[in-house]
Image (tube, rainbow, N blue to C red; front, side, top):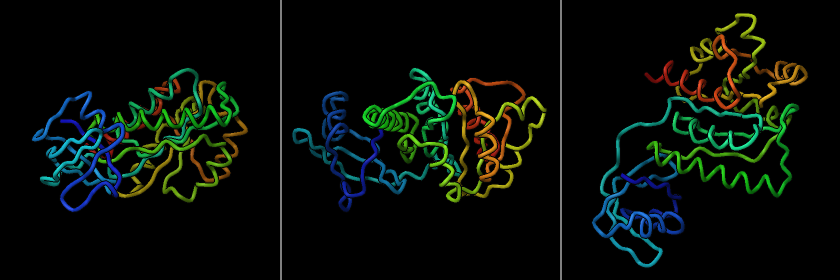
Length: 248
């Protein structure tokens, strides 16, 4: 069943009004008619089984039939801070990590990032990335759409360290030394409702200068298994490990 994420101001009592791209999708792509059913979710992660009542041009009104009780969100909030990779790899990361339960994405401009975005390109990219997150959240029956923030420098990200209960960064040198337990320890320590952030470097990895700065700022290095993962694989590994450890 199709799922749509709406703003709270689109809800009025036991009804909701759908406009814009979502209304176009309902009327032109899905070709729905009155009496068809969909799921709509508000900004508070509450989802409703709903019935299409009226279609007026590009405005769709639905009746909220009942709340859905299924819980599809992870017990903790996970932010993936990704060093900007080449090509469309970050789009793939957003799509798959959203399906796995990530709550937020922060693209990072790092020392070894090949990709450099000016302000104009950055704004267009962020708009596209958020659209990808929304579509992935709909497909995977999430109760929320992860936010993709604007591109950050590492110093800008470090300034937000107090927002999180657990701060990690994937560092292959830790794996080479056989120190493989930090991720597990951090997941044992975090409580339901807690916030975790993990930094993944770009193709060239995290530099020694960045590693030193992160450690001094309270981030802990962690290995993602004994093997070296590609930058686009690492976030999916992390999300899968988190789901297995605290959800299954």
